Length: 338
Image 1 (cartoon, rainbow, N blue to C red):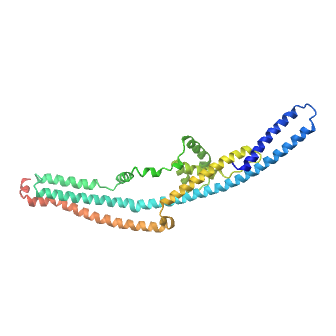
Image 2 (cartoon, rainbow, N blue to C red):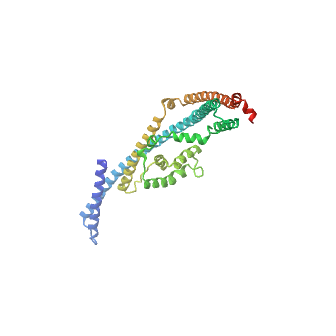
Image 3 (cartoon, rainbow, N blue to C red):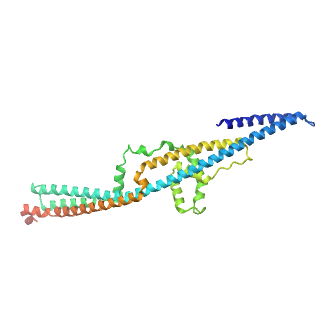
């Protein structure tokens, strides 16, 4: 605690004790109170007024500093939302232009490699007498073509399965920020305050807040992001305006607690922004339009490669179906056996 604040706090406490003692002595006189008692009462009251006035002035200065810190928190929160929105936009572009077509290409390559491998397996079996009849070969061909058709689909479920498999256990701890761990009691208190202060201030039914702002804030609530929820509470609670009529000691206690909370929140929020910006490349930070154009260009390259693989797969299907003719050429009697 600041030495000046501590000085005036202690002075107020001491003067209040003295004032109470003098009041007690004054009450013992039924009629005529000695002049010196009145004088002592007046002197102590005057000194107490001065000390309380100084603490009120300090409290007002502290409140002004807190409001400046609040402005910084609100600005940092807005900066975080800006970079977060940009990251989400880039992630969406990457998903649409790279991840999904990339996965389609990967599945096409897997299908082509499977069909190629099965073609040479069946061809070798024909040449070595591995099939006892043409029907056995035809059944094998149907199985291979059906598996190639269905097992390598680039559908949503298989895409998500692969994404999950590529998340290793070593990567999971990186997503945990120890600065943001909150105990259950604090969580409940934050949720209550968020619902009391923030949601009515941004909800379309109770405010004129733009829909995109409400969606951003409500997403924070749905994701139970306690750091951002705390920042929104500070923003929508508004500026601190201490009432000079209130007990300056109680006001100073509340301000000191709020000051500590704001400084902790500011530091945690700045670390969150720094962590987020570290996830973005310099080009994503400086020229997102260029990044978008590059992603679209890479998508076109992927689509061309997918088309090339599709043509190779079509040719392999034809080659596999043509194995029936190869079998007939190797075993002319197989036609007569049918």
